[in-house]
Image (cartoon, rainbow, N blue to C red; front, top):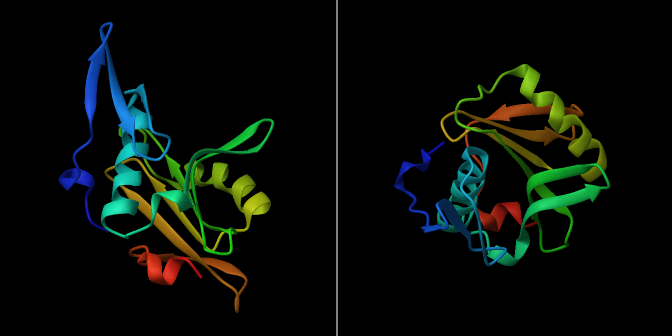
Length: 146
């Protein structure tokens, strides 16, 4: 998986707060560490994987108490990828995967991506074995959208 380092984010300061531009939601958001990772993931999806921004849903509300950091929908408008973003100081380990289980149950995506901007855990659902299988990288939009 390529590192996020090559992506540039739009940043501004307002009233002493750093803000990040979200090209999908078309607005400025507080530059908390997790938000920076989310914006870098969005930049990766758009710039590297060529996902059209209209299929990317940041902060997707699943129900009253559950929200996914990013959901990528396919051309059939079904969830294809769920992204969970953590702050860079949070490690990616099996304990952090637990949060994804509720997303899987509700959304049934084909791919999962858990990232803190430095570490990435990516998986695809194998329908033959009915299990999640770790993979090295995400597919390009042409393969993801179907």
